[in-house]
Length: 350
Ligand code: G1P
Image (cartoon, rainbow, N blue to C red; front, side):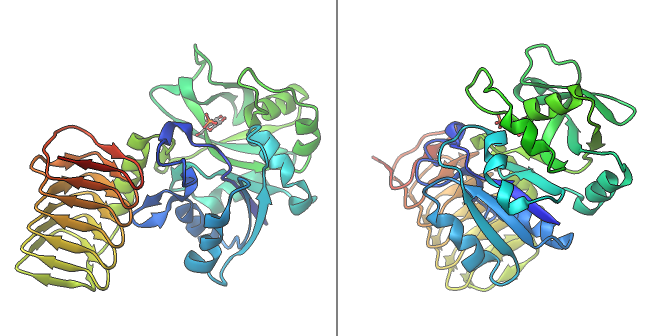
């Protein structure tokens, strides 16, 4: 069976980081976000993966070159304009052909039981679709499902008065019959062809679409807060591994330090990942901190944050918390509290 992952979204809520980097490639625990979805597909034995990507998609090729060499057969399908999730699916029609497929949204971070989801779909001989649902406190920003006896009765995209707290959690099993429905679909109020509308149309035509409750962790990673939550979950699972050198440091909890990193007189509190080739001195780091490759940290205190590769922070007196520092950004010689979201190549310096 093939899987399709949609990664062509513009990532407006994660700007400025998504100006240069697609949302699904944002680093979490020093790996691209979408790599965690691909891991789960591989665990379930799915190795043929179609990736719907934006026209400028050079960075995606790293997934096959660096992260999954030889293990996954990727197909790159370009969506030239961001015209919606259903439009993205339609671009993959000739790749997917006439077989049922698993559809995943590349900006959803989840621990999905892929095998169980596929089995459940196959257990209904008449199923034309099956949608993973998650219960959330505020469903208004998502697709919302009304369900009876495991069958979906109605799906509504971002309703102001949700009829239930079960939302569409970014994983769908679909029959190729969905393509004909998408071809007839009209754009939504936000000008997009919505997957929710395509499935609702199928329901209205009397085609059986089933619900499957996703019980594992789920997080929409469209915002900085969502990205930091995903980072926390990833860090909870790391073990200890020190490949760099430590001098006069204290270490508590699970800590990973990449090769070529040199850490002097610092307090490291896991869960914490430090990438390769970093220079760290007189710092207090963690918990829940990801430090990318080639970062420099001197006399600073950071936790619950994400530093992308090449970020530099020096003589920052207040703790840096729930912050994201972009690639090659610099914080130097000042003190401010509160959250910092600093774009690639930017500097705060005083
Ligand atoms: C999309 C889907 C929505 C789903 C959500 C999950 O919303 O349209 O049905 O619940 O992903 O993240 P979007 O991220 O495009 O607002």
